[in-house]
Image (tube, rainbow, N blue to C red; front, side, top):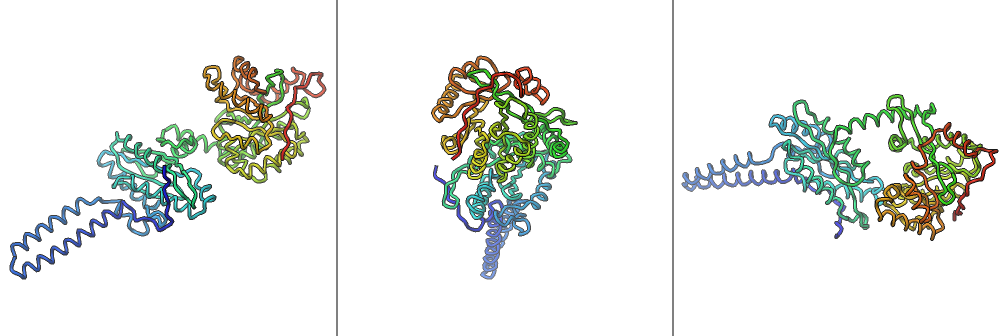
Length: 522
């Protein structure tokens, strides 16, 4: 597909406003000309012809007036109604004209739909290609929206890279709006050139509608905002309609954000331990540590329920360090062969001081660096490759182990495995869970294990659920396993009792698990 060339020039005249304006101007000019011709005919003595001409002119101007679209299209011509970069309506005008559209639709027993569009990773794009290229991309999206929207729609730029398209629809006309959203997603995803480089943008698109007495533009925007948050989290680029369950999810999210700092301060977020097993010897080698929160209102919350909110609110790093301190303090008298593994979030790799914070925590807890392992996802590497590489090399040079988590989840690259000093690779749990029923997944896992052998990288399987999968993994040479098959997550008291029974506390006479051989950074 040929990329579109984005011109760095002034914004186009809004299509929804310029066409009616031009037709109106042409009509008035034509009417004035006809009047002038009629006056000339009267002076020449052709009064009857002049009268007919004037009558026809009056009828034509009347029809033109009633056929021109009214409302938002013409209103966006006023300077204080327009976003100067894109030429679209601005947010204040959108809200005023939008409420008028909703009120009119209620009177005609129709509904109004709002389509919200947000460009994925726009700040990163503008940072990489330059602000001029970012502005060009915004104008491109605005032009695409105008060309796809109907003449009666209100098209606006809300803020930064967020756009809105408001249109009246029949209460049963959701399909038409959904098709519009799909067309926009396809067109915006077409390759374009920014700063002489080819780039394929992608947008998150959400849709909401309101109808009936009492409906407001604020209510509609809130619904669309909630759907947009969910669309961004889903990340597949497909349009998403508002669902009432999203309001419940947002209420929970707000409660988590409000209570998270206090929970950290009071020590309410506790570690949970998942055993990691050497599949060749069946011995325990260590634990992966995750977060658990007993919330006063929401009840027991595992990490996957609240950590995305912690990451979005900038607190995931604080949660990780708090877990490290608790787990390291508890593990000081465990068998020295047991390791602790902590998964890090993508947001943590935006912190240039991450390595120093982890090393400082190790020092304060008196925990040996070689017994600590941090897990890094491929998406975290992609977020900022240069900074991530600096962080992992700093950690590795202190003797801390490195694991590439969720390998195969979509960003897999041999270059990462060769360029960065990983000690092991963990396969995405989605591949492991279906191995017994899907031969293709078994082939993929086998290929990853063979790749690990070639690169001298032990491979670990996450999400192991049954003995058949464990045996299959052992046969193909997978080094380590963890998952529900080895029991539920354990709290601090449970893991200590478990280790006492296994005689793996300091001073116990028990064979040590076989440690993996670390790779050196460099």
